[in-house]
Image (cartoon, rainbow, N blue to C red):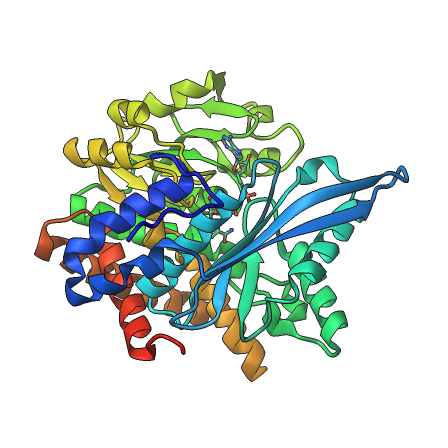
Amino acid sequence: MSSELSYVQPTANSPWGTYLSQVDRVVPYLGGLARWVETLKRPKRALIVDVPIEMDDGSIAHFEGYRVQHNMSRGPGKGGVRFHPDVTLEEVMALSAWMTVKTAAVNLPYGGAKGGIRVDPKKLSHKELEKVTRRYTSEIGIIIGPHTDIPAPDVNTNAQIMAWMMDTYSMNVGGTATGVVTGKPLHLGGSLGRVKATGRGVFVTGREAARRLGLDLRGARIAVQGFGNVGSVAAELFAEAGAKIVAVQDHTGTILNQNGLDLAGLVPASRTAGGAVSFKGGDVVPNEQFWDVDCDILIPAALEGQITAERAQKTKARLVLEGANGPTVPTADDILAERGVLVVPDVICNAGGVTVSYFEWVQDFSSFFWDEDEINVRLDRIMMNALNNIWDTADKHKITLRTATFAVACERILMARQERGLYP
Ligand code: NAD
């Protein structure tokens, strides 16, 4: 049966095309469940909304918004909301599908969903940003909810935006529905440890991968692309463990220092309008130089499709930790495997965020909040159990960690699908 959809035209390396190729690679390991695989190749539901707002100057602007619920076989949809001028339906579909795989890989009782708005939030005033967020939330309010689909932060969204989303949804339904989004501020039902959770998960899985490779983190050289929530937190944790952050790239450019960048200065500088390149403790170099910098570990933590075949060919890293979703295109994946570069794939590497989002949701429902140590201990345990299980599967079938993660996850998703049966 064809899995072509009339409403997207993916290419081999586009986000949905990348995802489809990853699913195709797992089919030989699914046994009889392969019969259900088509269910993974199309979203359950995709909503496109118009988001009109009145701008500060009195003009009316329209933005395109999306919420895609890829699969809900194992539980409510779960996944972030991205504000970026290049967001497309195809991208949101792929991000929602990776959420389905990720929540199953770490065995959380969720499906996968994702949302986005085609907007550059850096060009909006605070008030305009609030209006866009509220109108978007109201438009997708017909399909989200604490028991159906729970958004969270992603690129260019944060705790403040989650607070507006929670408030808008609550106003529309009456009452205070804290469980409708995660990644909220602490005093609005947020969880300790959520802000750092994704970076922390990258560190936990990376530390284990380095141990298995015999790579000592003390003195290890690390290059990080994307220095926002995920990249900067991961960098700080690796630096605390003795590693040197030798290169950082963000949307403003690339900064390099083979002796190690001083994060105490770089992190605050990267949060200003000038970005990472405004930090004076390194050399600003052309962006392409980032990809063949002398390093042991490469952490892509920005956007999809960044590790192309050409960049995979020239990287000097022994280990790639996918903080971002979908950073490696399928051809690059093959080249990295041939070159013996170990890739810890997004669907396990960056699962720390959704894991602590799950803790937040559980705490909201029980109205009982845990301390940060408890959060981090539970996060480490879930990540390590999942990673070890995936590693055993990879060893057993002699496959990459990515295909092994898909094998573990897709078996759970399709088993749930089979047990539920087809309605009607
Ligand atoms: P963020 O908005 O906090 O940071 C994004 C970073 O990427 C910024 O430093 C920005 O300058 C940089 N960037 C943007 N465009 C770039 C470009 N063209 N080249 C280089 N750098 C560029 O976003 P985030 O939450 O850190 O998310 C980063 C990635 O991690 C995304 O792929 C996201 O889907 C993924 N992720 C995030 C979470 C989470 O909890 N926030 C969880 C799982 C996965």
